[in-house]
Image: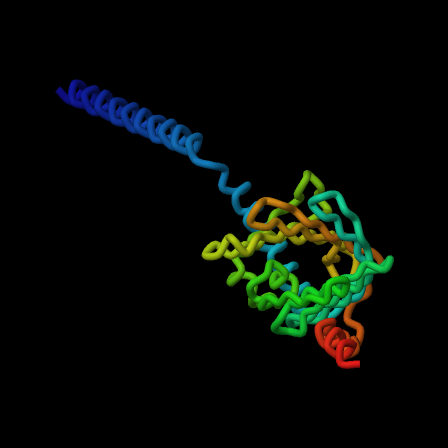
Length: 238
């Protein structure tokens, strides 16, 4: 009787162990099947960390680069190409001095962006906040308000970071994409090299920069301009 009882206990123990092992194997298989359906967590974390780092670099650039001067080349949608000198100071001030006797001037004084046509004596004005250039002329605190998002390695170029900005409530104002070149070994980790402005009709105007200098003292009279309408009146008065 004792022998029978012992055999029953052994068989029961063996059955329990086998069932436990099977249950453990089933749990492992289920976990493997579930993990196969989930995206790789490690890759997600790396991607998010990289994007956050790039966004932070743009924020730092906006905070630390308060002024710059550069030569610019502007490419119009109709194929026209003009060049000149750019002066920029945050917040809200910029001046495009066109070369080669181009009779235009673009100046923003902190609040208003002025397009001056000296050939016909006309000035057109817009609030800076209502133009795509506000993405360039603001600070890091403005990035969220302009619907900014960061693209890493645009065109497959790992050296570039692109800042896309558009007013989702007013898409008719157009959108801007600002391109920075990464400089990992320089004090300034990013360098502004180009931007593309797309208007409501899908027309793209591009501006490329060269020979850029940053954080110099810029004269206050750069944000002033000679009003061609006043000139016309004075000439008629004579």
